[in-house]
Length: 277
Image (cartoon, rainbow, N blue to C red; front, side, top):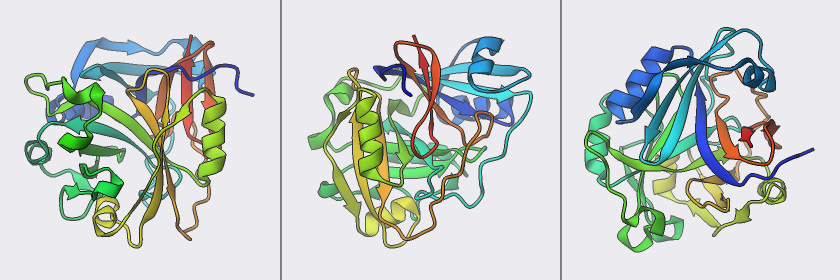
C-alpha cells in the first residue's frame, strides 16, 4: 500500500559497478558538476532499499537537477544485454540541450541506441530532435532539443553553463506493459496526466532502434512540473515479461521524490521510486 504521495522529483539515483568511471563519464562527457566528496550511504537508507553491507555515493548535478551515482558493496546484476527500448526494465533520463549538433559531437564513441544519429520527430510526436544512447554501464540516456514552437516554459529562459552540453533533465521515461493500469497507479500517487501522444513512423523507429514502433507516450506530472515522469507503452507483441530488479542491480534506477514519508515504492512493472519526507 502506498503511504505517501509523489509531490516533486528531487533527484535520480543510478546504480553503477564502477563509481569513478561513471562519475568521470557524466562529468567529462555530459558536463555534470560534482557536489562534495564521495560519501557513505547511511544504513537506514540501505535498509529501506532492502540491502545489506555498505554503499558509496557521489552527488552530481546538471542545471537544477540532481543525480546520485551509487555503488554497493554487494553488487547486483549488470544491465541486461538484451534489453531494448520496449523492454520493461528500460528507463532513460532525457537531457535537454540547446544545440543538438554540438551535444551529439561531444558524445564521441558512446554506444548508440538510435540508428543514424539524432532524429527529427514529426509534429504529432512533439516535433523535437532526439538521440538515445547508453552510458558505460548500459543505462539509457536521451538528448532532447525542443522545437521553438513547442519549447516548455520551464526551459525557455535556461542557458547551459560553461562546459555543459545540457540545460538539465526534463523527465525520466519508463517502459510499461499497460498504459491504463500504470496511469491509474501514478494518478493514485498524486500525479496528473499530461498530453498523450502516439509516436510512430520511420523517425521513431530509428530513434528507438526498433522496427514497427508504435508507442503511447503519457506524461505523468507532479505539482512541481519539471522534471516529470513519462510512461512509454509500446504496442508490441514482443515478450515483455517483468525483469524484477533489485535495488543494487545496475538497471535499478530510482526516481527520488519528495513525499510524506520515507519509503521505497515499486510500480506495477517493477520500477523503483524512493520517497523522502
